[in-house]
Length: 398
Image 1 (cartoon, helix red, strand yellow):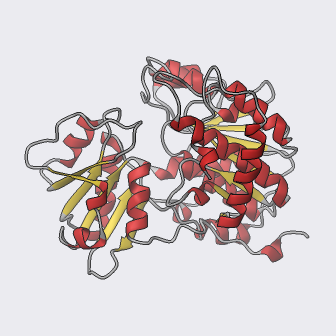
Image 2 (cartoon, one colour):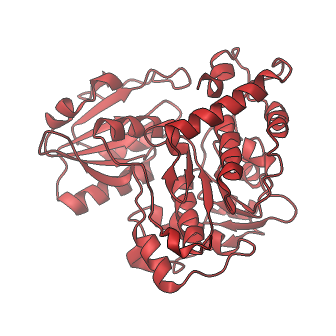
């Protein structure tokens, strides 16, 4: 399995991903032309929700859909799914073997490294071929034009809300970041967008803006995920050759969707504590997650947060207000935690977050932060991330 991280772990300071090398690897694997329609999701927030709802719609329409997202929810198996179900350990190991063999046959790296998210993307496209998928749904890891998803020009591109993230990497302004995201689209790509702030909307002025009403309200997730879910369904409807699912089937499949770490509630094993987990990293997201928790519980006893320096730390701190907070730092080399925590906050390492420690914080605990951390907590509470929606194989032609 080290093939996914080998070059990234050996990268030199300042070295960046080599998409050209990823293209050569895709060519060696024989997947540069995936042979099936592609729907690509880019944006700053809500990409996983949009990809999940798009995949659920396509499965309800009778298509065998391979979905590739980044990062995984609990494990790397979660990054690649067929009809909502994560690949098995054996399947992922087989994909890793194929990538390892092809990567070792390439010339040694010279201008950059093969990124983990890009390698999982290639593994997902390879798995789609092996599994006989009819359609691919790909979530960009970061960016658009500079991301490995750009190797597979999409039939439909869905752009979730764009804001000022990775400033200096993807662009210095919202408009520059939007141009980077839009760069994933090819000449024939149908582009759909969630409602955007004015500078982004100007860049995306040729895109079809998806407003409310695409999905019945009772089938939508709570909070900020609603716009992303409707965008995903609208994008799936524009995929070539995909019929409208029977209304009853669509309702049944969309009603089965689960979104771990998107305001999802879980019991803490061995205790009476419940946690609400949300991958919120800015003021707007934290505010929405707090509102969802208060709507569900009335009160919140404690917040556990993980906010690397490049996230909206000030906005999140303001939204948390006077809540008692434990701040968690992850031991990951690409994340920095140099900003001092506000007075009164406890600061711990991720290893300190256990079922026992969560139970000491109260009966109603909200967990917020980067996806790497919320994935860790999903593992701590043993959340089920095996399947994101349910379909019946009997609905699909053999």
